[in-house]
Length: 473
Ligand code: HEM
Image 1 (cartoon, rainbow, N blue to C red):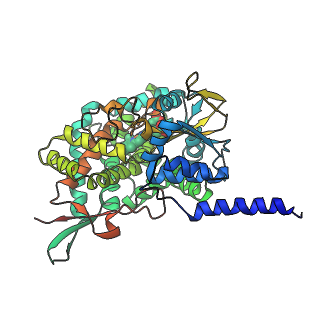
Image 2 (image 1 turned 135 degrees about the horizontal axis):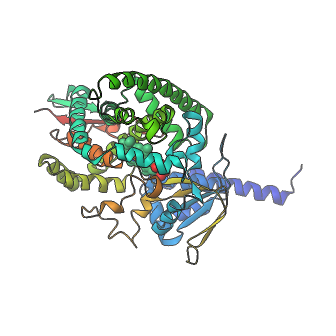
Image 3 (image 1 turned 90 degrees about the horizontal axis):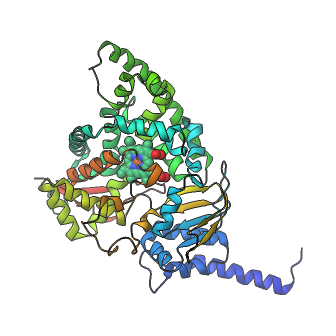
């Protein structure tokens, strides 16, 4: 088809504007002027570029993105994320106002976790985080909470403390700094932050795995697919399925082995898996061996990457705040776990592992009905509930841009909110600060010089390398 000159000109001009907006990026980390995000977003001519711009801003400067949204455009609806398989979306909706975030996360019948379920089902079968208001949520989650008793908290703490110190000792290399002084150098993602929750899954959960390498691979592959593979890239999903099948076979064998052991000697082990076996769950709760396998696997799937991202991001945030860093070190040295915890969760408010939680709109819906924020959401939309934004919402959170130690734990949404609030929340409230504490107790802990001392995701969804140094006594 031959284009009329005027049409050709219009298209050329549009292409120029589009490409100009690509070649002249705004410094998202240090934006100048007011409404930098919204200006950048609005200048994109194509919806697909708006979507890309939205995700880039969320990744690079979620605090600024959400701040502008809360003030000027609390809900943004744009192009759907294109998917390669499974669910197809009709649009992408980002929600910033705290009340609206809560409305999304409370309304499980409209905003479902189908996105997770669509991945998890192929991998291991139905699981609480892939279902809403079913027996997996209403029976199995409370059952797991009953097994993970508050009476265990001191034991969890002491296991984490010893695992963390051991991991730091084993992961540290002795080297010299520029002046020739001997120092400790440690890559914390793999040597500590991933390793401790994986080892705790063994000592407390009763799921040690055949070896650490398999546990690292299973944990990463499943989490990369369930939580980060929104586009449903087939190779990422295939890795998760393989991990799921391997885990199923391994835990199935482990159950047989432990059943024999615990029948002979019920006192031989007291882990989450051992408790399930000893309670004879088949009769008590209808929790068959198949369900036990998935529930045990969930202890790893929930724990590994979330914990490591939290440890790395919290430390990275503290390193940008000398006063708070000194306060956290003092709290660690004085064994003031309550105060240290406050530093940790507040630092994570500024730099959480995830700034949003995804939901799938099962039907058309009007969000924030009757308010100036009222927004129609179409069935099939990918709805991103801005949990980080909710933690900065000035109508709910006092002086949100201040780093404060007096915020109630209930305000934070780092461990989720509502029906799907993290099953490992109490473990994490102990584990994350205790890993950080073990590191902060090292003399003059600091990021390694240069790029090594920055979190490196190596192009993937999780921290993969982060090198710290400390003085040797
Ligand atoms: C710092 C560490 C952790 C963070 C930041 C974290 C975060 C979260 C979040 C945000 C959710 C809700 C997801 C949603 O609503 O879309 C969640 C759910 C869940 N987490 Fe965690 N988590 C952590 C550690 C753990 C640990 C240690 C376990 C192991 C016990 C675990 C197991 C789970 C499970 C099973 C769910 C699903 C709960 C449900 O669907 O009702 N998590 N987690």
